[in-house]
Each structure stands twice: as C-alpha cells, then as structure tokens.
Amino acid sequence: MQVTSLHIGASSVSLLIGEQAENGTITPLDFLEQPAPLAHDIFGTGSVSASTTERIVAIIHGFQKTLAELGLPTQFLTRAVATNILPEADNHDVFLNRMRVACGLSIDPIDDGEMTRLIYLKTRRRLMDTPAMKRNCTLVIHVGPGNTRALLFKKGVIARYTSYRLGTHRTREAVHQSHAEGPALLDLIRQHASGNLEQIRLDYLNEKVEALVIIGYEIQLLAPFLNKGSKACPIKTLKIATTQASELSDYDLVRRYNLDYHTAEALLPAMEIAIAISEMLRLPEIYIPVSDYEQGLLHDLLISKTLIGTFEQEVLRATHILAERYHSDPRHGEHVSKLCLHLFTQLQELHHMGPHEVLLLQCAAILHEVGSYISPRSHHKHSQYIILNSEIFGLDRVDITLVALIARYHRHSTPRPDHPDYAELGAEDRVRVCKLAAILRVADALERTHHQRVHDIGVIVQADKLLLRLKGITDATVEQLAMQSKADLFTQTFGLNVVVETT
Image (cartoon, rainbow, N blue to C red; front, side, top):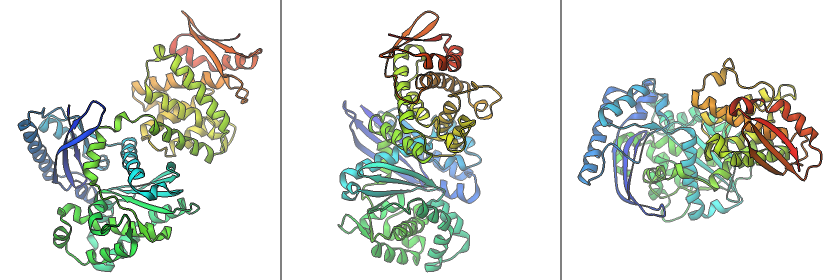
C-alpha cells in the first residue's frame, strides 16, 4: 500500500511517498522538498505574508501534479501537517483556510504531544545506532525553529523532559536587525539565548550527563561536514566551523553546505546553541545524527499516531517523575491508577472510550494528590494548578488540561459550567472529563485507606446499578462510606448507582 505525508515546515515544504508493507514497515519511494520562508514571516512580522502563502500553494500544487502522474490521490494524503510554530502567526487560521480552498487539504499544525512523539521516534533510533545513548546518562537536545526540547535518558529510558522558548529561526529573526557579523554576531546570538541557556544549565545542573546528542533540521544538514567519518563531533571542530560560517555571506553558506537561503539564515543559531549547551555540560564532543532530518520526520508522521507500548510507558514514567517531585504518595497513586485501568477495561461497553483516554485517566490517577504539596486543604484544586503548569512528556496542552481537570474532580465538587477551565472545553471534551473523573472517583473511594488492600474486584453492570464485589475483603465499611460521597458523578454520568459488596 502506498502512503504519503506532507509537511509545511519552518523553511521548506516537503513530501514523502512510500510503500507500506503489511507489517507496517515503510520503504521510501520518492522525496520532494522546496524552500518557503514561513518561519521568516512568523518571527519577523508575526503573520504569514500573502506571497509566502501563495508560494506554498504553488509548491503543493506541484506536489499534487507529481502524485497525479503516479496515479495517487492528490487531495487525500495519509498525513498533512504544518510546523508547530504556525499557531504563533496571528493569521494562521487564514493560512490554513487558504490551503483548504486552494489545495483541497485539511492541514493540522503539529501540537506539543505530536512533537514529543516525533522526537521520541528519532531518539529511539539513536538508541540503536549511537553508543552514547546506551550510557548511564545522555541528554538529547532537539533544537527546532521556535523551541528547544531536552530529553534526559538514563540507561535508555526517559528520566526528564523540558522545553524552552529557544529556536534557530526565532533567534535568527531576533538578531537579524543588528547587522552584526563574524564573532560579534556569535556573541549576540549567545546573549539573546542566554536566559534559556541558563535555565537549561539549572535544570540539569545536578545530573552527571555523560553524552550529548543534538538533533534538528539545520544541525543534521551539517553532520556530513562535521563528523568526518567519526561518530562524534569534537566541540573544537564545531567551533572552528561556526567561526568560519559567521564570516561567510548567506550566498557563501548556501554554496558551501548545499543549502537553501532560508535554511542558511538559521544555521549560525543552530551551531552556536549546540556549542553553548556542550560548554555548559563540559563535554568535549557531541553526537549529531547523519540521517536526513526531514525525510525521517515525514516517515515518522506516518507511524506516530500508532505508537503504543513503550511510548505509553514513557508517558507514565514522566508522570511518576512529576508526582515524585511534589512528594505525592507513590504507592497510593499507582494503586489508584491500577484500579482505574481495571474499571476502565471492565466498563468498556459503558463508556466507549479508547487507549488515549485510559492513558489520560492513569496520569490523572497518579497525580491526583500532588496538590497536597501546597496544602492538604483543597488539595484537588492545587493538583489542578500544578498539573496545568507542568509539562508531561508525550502530552499536549489539551491533554494536560484534561488530566488536570480529571484530577481536580477526584473529590468534592463535580464539574460545573462556571468552573473556568472546564467551561472553556468543547462539548466532547467535557463529556470525556466527566466520564474519566467519574471512574477516578470510584477508584479513589476503593483506595480510601491508602493501604492498597483492594485488588480483586468483580465488576457487574445491572439495569440500574454498578455492582463492585471486593474479593478477599471481609469488611468493606470504609470503602462503602467513601463511595457514598464519591459515586455521585458516576451516577450522574452513567445513570447507575454504585454498590460495594464483599464476597
């Protein structure tokens, strides 16, 4: 089966045509890419210009002509996405409407959750081909056009995830008006990035980082020139190349590194940011993948939505790390999460939700008491605040909002239209919050003692009630009393009274 993915990126528009085997493996057949100054517009003026918009329309029309010549549908691509910086343009809706009208395509900007999935796929490949990733502590830095993301790996699993408002094109546009050149330009880039660089230093100050891996569109284009057959690039080599590049015109950079002009503009920030981070960590070399960044991105777009298993475990691991940071009882949170998973699975025919919803439910269960770090009083509201103002690897802002609300409603008031964050949700997301919070409240009632004594539960749905039979429990008075105050949302949402019995 042939598959296609389109990406409207920060400085180019690209298309991958591939063949997908029955086992899901994708073999690239053709790759097309044309430059377009989207990031230049967004970070320079705050909006996408009409000329850039029509430039992208023309590029896509050319791609569609190629698809038609190959006998492929031109308006039904497997995936069609735009860079995650697009929403920063004040006319991004106008731009997307133009793509729909002119090209017949519905294009979605990549959100935070999708971006972390894509970075995860890239780093999983690095685990296989980069020895540094197998060391005890490796920091992977993704330097994007507008944001930088850091993933700390310990023994091959993610131990921490952070993001920063620091990017190649964002930095380039910020320093462009200075007209500085050579070392003065590099100093200006470093000064502009200093706040975010200092935050990265503070975030990983106490970690004994043994290796640094840098990934990103611009830096990976330089890998063949920097690595020189070695699997790592010495910082001295990168510094020399950066100094030389700072003294070249954009025209000379295009010729030397075989780039387009829009990419050449962001080259120096990419190089200088990489140097700055390596110096902070006092590492003599960095690992830069030699694989083509854009082709890899287009490939991963075709499979990122189907990520299960290890990715979900990484999301839950990140959630546990956040709970630990706020000294939430790990045994209680984990046990409530297990009870939620059991109830969710047994009640599938009642709630009709899928794998992503159960992941959000488990995250909310693990984090539902983190608010006690601020104060036991009204800790459910404090939990909502902490989650809303945190990052969880693999979840976008909508997901985090849902997790925060599900955790908030694990006790006391049920969702109400006058609750600000809940009121801002669409109808579908409100229903999801109610369903998932209802299950969490039931699970939390079953773990009222915080002693993890309820394990084996028989779940029986009858005409007007949900019967929960606690096996191996002789006296369930505590759980029955807790259910009287916590089952109200379940009854309101599903129309069933919750009854707890022992066997």
